[in-house]
Amino acid sequence: MTAGAGVGVHAYFYQDYNDEVNDESKPLENEVPEEKLQNSVELDDDEFTVVLSKEYEHPMNKLPWFWQWLYKLKRVVYLSCLFVPCASVSFAAYVTNLKSLKDYSLDLLVRTIEKAGCTFQKYGQWVSNRPDMFPQYLVDAMKKLCSHAPIHSAALTRAAFKESFGVEIEDIFEEFDLTPVASGTVAQVYRAKLKPEYALEDGTVRVAVKVRHPNVMQETFFDVDILYHFLNLGSYFSPACSVPFDRKQFVTLLQKQVDLTCEAVNLDKFQNNFASETQDGGLAFPSFSREILSPSVLVEGWAQGKVLEEFFDAGKEAIQDTVGTIENLTNDLDGQITEARKDMATTIFDTAMKMFLRDNLVHGDLHGGNVMYNTETDSMTVIDAGITCALDDVDSSDNFVKFLHAMCTAKSEELSASLLSMADVPASLDREQFDTDIRDAINMFMDADTQKAKAGDGPVPVGDITAEMFRTLQRHGVYLHGDVTALLMSIAMLEGLLEQLDPEFDMMKEAIPYIVRYKFDAVAEAAGDGRSGSGMLFRVLSAIGII
Image: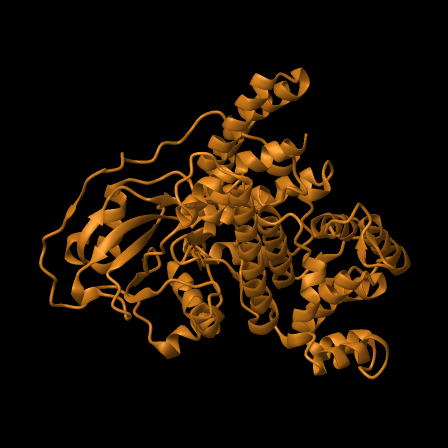
């Protein structure tokens, strides 16, 4: 069963958070303290440029080895107990084929993943964006994880402020609604109003306050290892579970997002990279406070709108505000909704390709719960920039571009060579057989002559090709570098989002102009010397402004 292989086994019982959430929302009246906030990060421009270059070390690595092992043992026991009962329910549903039992097992799966913690929730989110790789019923179930994760108590939020800044919430905010408006895998978000003294640089006082869940640090210390082994086991049953990458690098990548200071740095870079595009109606990124900032607290400008996942089923309810209240939706409204979703897909793809090819800084969690759409201004804002991906050096960047170009043009030999250039290759690799298997992976879904999908007139199924390549890599013992794997997973996330907005969007076709525009030298090298064949064609088309 794909659900069992893709997500692992599931659980039956829960681990409660410490306290109930305080639902009060009231003005706050304490005076602003004269002293500077204690323990605040408040990085200046120069410091912001170097934070991400520092090697991340998980805080729990500083504990004595015996405490680390005790915690790991505790976690293994807990997760084992969590998984076994629900796995039994899933197996019973599979054997009996009873719809009621299947529905119950899916609901149990979602609630179990929520209790399993941050790492498992992240994988569930990825599944929710891959309708091409997983059954639709599983995709629909996992969508619940994109914006509705378990919440922690108001008391723990207050404790985070006290520990981070040495002050109470009332010292910083005029208003603070202690009922979270959303909860993600790493943190939950509150609506608040800053005191004028703490307004953001652009004068904003209406803000979203992100506070890290207290259990995240413990969960991200060991759970990625567990998930990695589960997926390796699942890969024997489903190619969608293949994970041909270096585990240590990938663990570090995921763990780094739990430091909200890193997310602030990411936001700063994205704002600088897309300043002109934002003015022209492209994706925007929220402003943030450099003063009220710590590893567990981040204050951002409030992003107006609704998350894109509300548009995936039909989008009619979410878009009615832009066309007026209509009791009976007509075909004309359906057309407007479809066109709006197509425009969203185009804008998101344009931003993503510039991240990949122009800036080498990619939002690594671009799913429907992390993009807000404002119906009044017809604009979108990207939130939750905790995960970013970047290639380590120029050679990696050039090789990755050659990989993308080979994928888009169905050139299996170039694809094989570029993959091996970005991976740890065993000495025993049978290169001839590897090349053959990569060619078969392409030919299975794509016509190499026409560079179109074999099945019908739709877009080339990038996800299916990638899954087949992953199977080939794992079968031959080839492991991609961590930075490359992160980008491939980001592409998978992006394709899932685009497919849900516009099923006809062809990533392969649309990517070629961006590849040539931003990485012409690498493309020309892949095509030859740039003076003949494809290289000359790209140069001519670029010169006359077609691409």
